[in-house]
Amino acid sequence: MTLTDQKSSDKQNGAAGDMTVIRRDILRLAWPVTVENILQMTVGLVAMAMVGRLGATSIAAVG
Image (cartoon, rainbow, N blue to C red; front, side):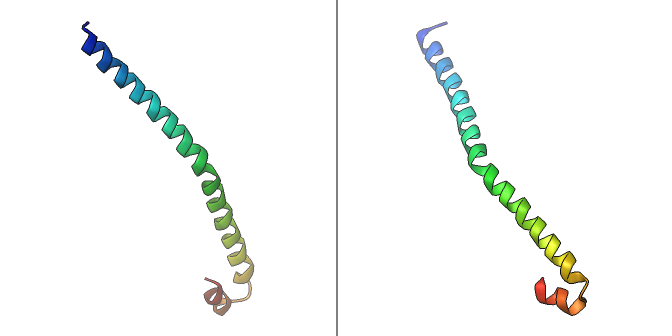
């Protein structure tokens, strides 16, 4: 293996390591948004279930 081959190999390994770090950082930033979205959908579902007992006009007003 020549010196240029070794440098090329090191660059490829470094890029893979960088992608792992980037993916980890993205997931660390994205999970609170995902949880928030799930909670908002749950609140909307519960609100629609409560208003649904009042009638179609009430459902139309909410959603």
